[in-house]
Length: 175
Image (cartoon, rainbow, N blue to C red; front, side):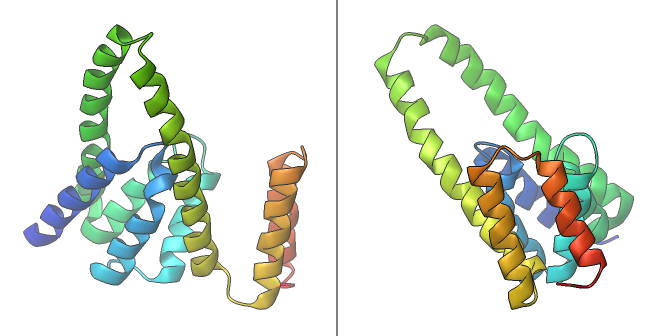
């Protein structure tokens, strides 16, 4: 195993850990850029596959970090990537929570919370854009992605039904 790769894994996921405001999917574009374009640990389609597996599996969505770490550095890479993603954010949340509880009625606290909401929405939209570019390979797939997005945003249809129908369409080779 390459020590340089392990250091890159630690540097990448510990920095992403501190930027993942609103969840791990908010740093997906940067995770994609670094793992595919900068470090070449995997291809576009492998990244899309790892993302799909992590979203389909039960449990926390941090599974993508573990899978990327495994692809880059084997078992040790998976363990290090997972710890690097969890530890900095966990320590930061612990410290901020202690401070935040003391500032419960502060106008500054409410302003900060309102400011993070659009930031998080923008980061999640950027993640969706990056993933659709990595996974979709034709106009049929882009149209299906757009239709699914419209259904998710404007209806109360169970997302599992939408994902199952889209998966069936893909399985049948229609996209």
